[in-house]
Length: 358
Image (cartoon, rainbow, N blue to C red; front, side, top):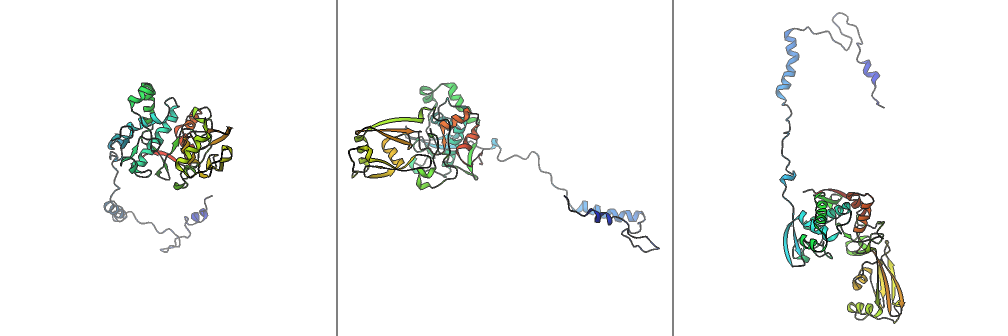
């Protein structure tokens, strides 16, 4: 409620005295006669105010916006093409069509393709601005086409020859065009938008894969539903025990082993998402990521069985490092009605999807 004292205000609005002769006991003095001289004296202060105080300047309605889209040059990016060892400067949006075409199946839901386009755009621009990654690994170019280091890329001709038709290419082009200039930020800065094929049911904390990078608030483990219907979800691989021993000895020549693999393979610790964090193979202890790399396994979410003393069966769940957005999960969420922004917000915790601030 308004706490002003309206009673007091009304009290002092009244005459509190009666004129007696020339004296005035109230708040209202005697009336001033309306002569020309008195009228002029009353109006004079107003005239001086109008003359001395300039009117406020009106902002020009037609003032051009220096950040208007038509005044901005298209963003270009320098790409090292690993397949032919050539460095090219390309229009960012054109480059992104080839990235999305290479990184995500064209038959995925359109909202999933849009999410991939925004993640790929953020990835490219953040590296062009030197926020993440290393220029030295691709001869000073902003990005390369090696998926193990940056992002895959495919030309239209290669796509039409091996993956899809004109309608599929146009579908991908529309996903890129409809999200033009949209990027992902966290507290005002472009994020490091890591992504992978299939999480196996839960994504991974970044520090569990790249311990040197430490914790990143938007790259934390989240449950990722409905990925089991994709081919990348589960894979079974059978190795001979000698194969595994030989691969380990290439890196660790002094490694020692027993005859029974069931005694020589031991998971020491798991990460919060259920992936192997540390494992012992014979006399060697190594990170789960290193074990995956040695055996070229799809992920570090592994289960072991031993059909006999000479073989090891490894069941891998998921595909990729598991950090950030799951592409299969993005498609599954899109089929449920999620928009591309909601998909990105699902996998990158606490982020904002917004237009690029040039």
